Length: 78
Image (tube, rainbow, N blue to C red):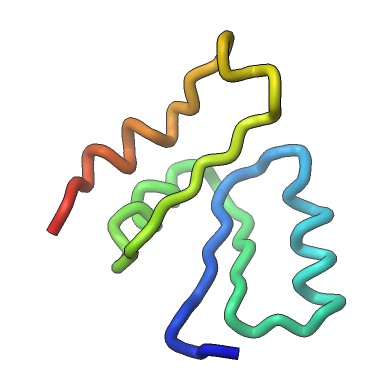
């Protein structure tokens, strides 16, 4: 396991609890699935990062635009 790489999953989507359970079951120490108010999400966008991944259920792409993309774009490049 590369300890220089940390995966931070943010959001309260329908798979959040299952993801947190799987992280715990596997004992993954470089994966964080925090819970908390949506107001804390802005701070996570400002964390040092090299990649953001926004997931969307297949078939929804024509009807939904993930609002997290706006926050990601707002913090911009370095």
